Length: 635
Image (cartoon, rainbow, N blue to C red; front, side, top):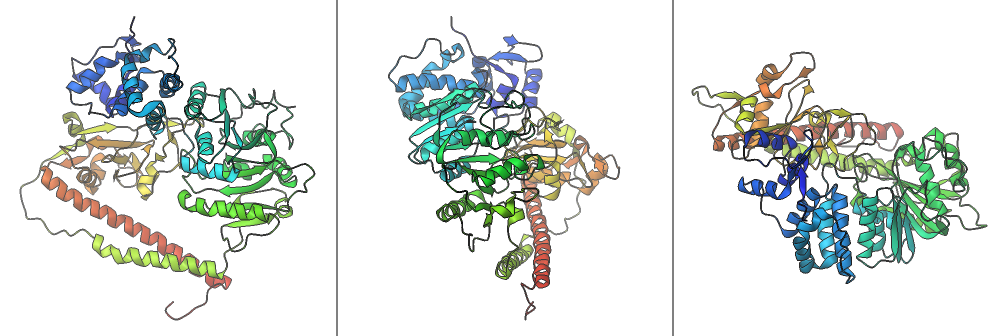
């Protein structure tokens, strides 16, 4: 008997590229919307084929490429996207090996077998899996966070995986192992707690005929590779999990450098990786910055340094590695060779202010120079220092790279000041061109203004949010979060502040976001920010045929709307539904919208000029006070 795949309301929203509120509205407004075929009253399920046909009839399901269409159906028909891709991967792997697919394949995928076969005929089993993989791993709300490829490649390069066997004990969906394969490893092994992700990582390797395996299970409590060693290891361990096995693993032989405190699970992963290295092999782990300085871990850090196991700590750029834009560290470790004297220095690199793609080209040569001469300082690097181990073994054993870098010399201060002055000059030079050219409008009749609530009812704009706040430290999103403070201060998405609870709302170009609470009403038009909506913010998604987003944002930030939509307290709370928007023809909206856009660019330039001006003042004052700069003509 054929089983028709079903789909939830949240999955319908993903299928149509809208928010869940839109699906709820469709169910209320359209009598012909498909009726539930299963689930519960709180979480109904619908027949996928019926939903797709309804969306297509309503013009809400755009034509998609074969891979896009298949991926949406796979994700909707499976318990999780990872489980769906793993089930398809099993079928493709059987075809790759010339085997007959197992009859126990997921019954929900049976209606999709013709599409799967068609994609495999077109691209081959490996190519078909890769196309679906790209869609699975694309950033989006609700997706599990994966180590970015450029970061994974840097980790593989630091671990020197070429020509050897590699282990990733927290493999996730396989980002570290894929990087190791790209870097030329000969065998790849991993373990991952999530069974579906472990299957995906193993399927990627199997479809490329890479020797190795990825086992499902808890690496710390149930090590699948106990007693085995490898040439290198890469690892992005889970952070901050206090229930990692501290009680039952108290006498585990892996703790050569000390029993990790309950609150230091990352130090358990460090020693787990070292245990699986052959003498002289390197491990590279992604670590939270706090692990370099927390007092609870100082004894283990000291022992790692004394015995030559911890060789480098690298502070990465903000946003290069974490789901919320938090700057993280890389720890580079080495399994000490027997009877080898411990090195006298450890390398600390601080590139937290750079861009990962740019700084990676500096990190690797610096690391290679250090390994070639580990007992000498790194001369002239500016961002790196080979610190004597004896200097690091103080009371705190704080390995935070920024705290161990020498103060900038006169040349460095002067160069930085020149760069800042040049940037400030360029910004100021462009300011006049950014000022919108406006003139007094002739007196005409009063233009009708309508509340945002009426625009929502008419379908001219869709209102999403505000979302609730979560205190759950394990909840995270692969994309950064755009917070109210980011909008008010004119900065990019970050991890500051509280994170939204529940299913995240991904921002799209043309969205207008408005903080609920602020001293002044503020609106931002989303252009290319890849982020999810933060807590305590409205998201207005205008119908492009009815409203120009820049016109809408400009109308909302009108001073009159602060009185119209606010609570009139010291720090105002806005009900955006009460704000008024002038009703104008689309050509006039676009003309005003362009003026608002230029005004926004002018405001951003003014903000940047103020920041650069303050930086230039501080650099000049520091340089003069320290004797690195001297007064001269033109200063």
